[in-house]
Length: 342
Ligand code: F6P
Image 1 (spheres, rainbow, N blue to C red):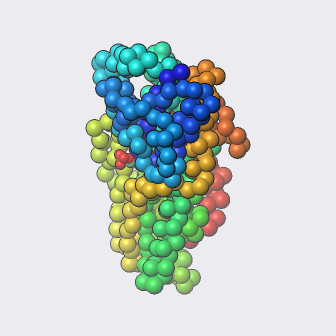
Image 2: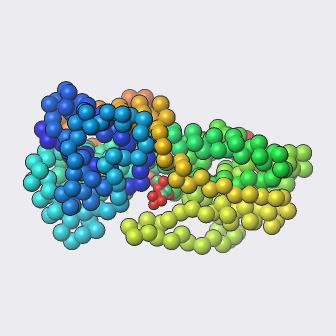
Image 3: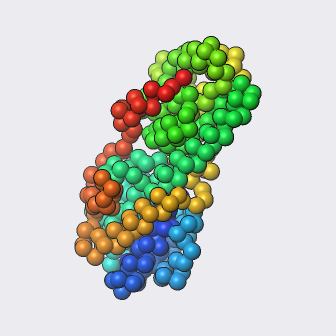
């Protein structure tokens, strides 16, 4: 078979490990030829690709980013997008396409699949917000980076008796914030799933400081929003692909805390540090398992599916099911995390 691979959306630690695993099993076990389309769907639209083989994938397991490049362009942004996709796949004799991406890329993959392309999806994102899988690769790495940052902020916060507000990624969900907040012993964590009341945040900090703890760490997910009728925050700008550009809510939260409590407050926005660099051992293994499972799915003819982690086992789920909603943090987990607030 001739199999195409692409990586779409934001990059994420573990992408190269998936590519390596697909190529390894495709070449050594199935005798396939693999091509990697460059810059996500754009490479398919523009017929730009490289040939992938085991030799070319040497050293990829620990390497961050994606050797294929990525973008948020997709066929449905262009009137003739699907015609161009079909033309490229036909010209290159591609029998199936493995699409490694987050919510946006997988939604497009599902739509392209309904238009006659034989697709298999692999869920990637540091945000861990894809339904149908307990984990996406990249999440464990992001949590480890955020946790280390929180550990470091503790000592400087304590030395200066300051409130440190640390903003983590996650888009519209608080998985990274909740995990890193819990692992790092944060004073409190603000997530999109539970809009915050700044009065309550400040009251908790005051109570904590009255008890003699003068340093606090407040973890804020980039998508966290205040409860309606409390403080105003500007609507995020939208990028050229129609994506809301999040980031900066920590500045508003910190300014309000300092103004209302008088506690000296500083802001750290972790940003893209969370998704750069080498994947953790967990993410390397999950990416590898996903890659092997994806090429197996191709050979089983399981098109229109996504590989997923369920109870520790790799399974296949219908793509349509996985892209119909996002996976938010469960109320039970949020309640557990809140036991340790303030
Ligand atoms: O989806 C992954 C993610 O890193 C989000 O956490 C973040 O909101 C977004 O991508 C940022 O994307 P970019 O800066 O690449 O547009």
